[in-house]
Length: 557
Image (cartoon, rainbow, N blue to C red):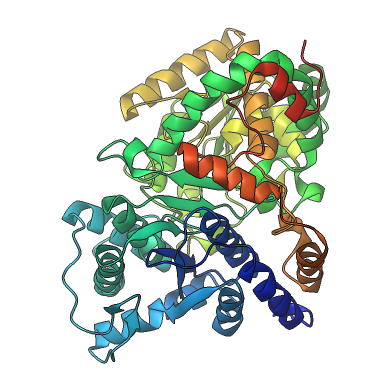
């Protein structure tokens, strides 16, 4: 539990700052989620909401809280009082504990609670969510709360699912009631999955309300879900994947010469902080990669193979296991679940000893699985010397990079990281970058194994399975992710600043001593909102190349 001494002075500063930096309130509302224990998350959500209020006069309604499951499984220091104080300082009209309200409604003890003109403690009509969508969200949430890859018929897991379903029905009613009875500008949320977050997102999109979801990384990174741009019947994140692919081909790839030096510099700088894997792998001590060329990799391959117990003269396929209960069903995936993918891949690998197989477990799997799922799969193949199962932290990134000739994943960020190093990746699900042209994305289970066979045959034949264009595309994506879609703002600060006194001291200094005109967060949110773009960007991409070059600070050729 961190102790804060600069938090209350910051709140006074923030209250004054925002009172003079948003438009007057109106009858419209902005719904803001504040259900993370980390104040940096709530900070980002509230900052985006207030950036919108510079264009769209509205009142801010904040829903917060945590239940017993989240406090036991995920959170360690959730502090509703601090969150409420921050929301109030940022101009929130109402802050209410939606989890406590849900629990009371389930128990039949809810008292009247008026929020945005709606009595959320009274009788509410059933949600308009489809039975299929409701079941998917309930199932995914139950898996996450039970820490299992999938639900079986055991009484314990069925009881957990019933508990989640009862709470989900009330979440859905509350969100529907707020959206149906108000003119809602937008919903701002840090997550789009699970019942507490996801049911609000589903309801907003069904009511044609845009959803903006800031990311817990970098400066200010925000993705946008605009109902009119989303494909009907698709998972929540699917439209984002398609729109990012369209943007990549419209703006990034045509400007590849202009961006080449920048993307190469980002690749070099990113060798110690390669996206999400570096978070999971505890920073530069674990995630630094000095091997940048095939020659570098070849020099380290023999000791790496010896360390693992695999023949370094044979090609090696690296299978990166996912956190098996994490955000199930929020994008297209071809297998029944993440566990099904690892099981079927392992069974296929057992029949293909012409190559090595490294199965690497998620380094934080203990936060997502209480059943020893990965170890159970590994135990089936102890008699297969060409298959090795280990935690990803058991090998340095240098050894992993030296040994790996092909990456397999459903949606993991390794499929953006390794292609940037010249190593091909095969996906059997969609991620944000899946339509950007640097991975092979299978559209069915059959296609996955067909592509896997083709890739294995290619490795044995010594073929190049990734083209120079794909490597360049992967590096452009890395630049886009770490630079173009990451807006530096004095109103949020970079994520590594942390959530202690240093953060609130810096924020207060910016609010007191930096004029808000030209604030990058305000300009970027304005562009995103007016143009209905799928992401926040620090650059205006609708300008001629010479003006884009000026924004980038480079010389156009």
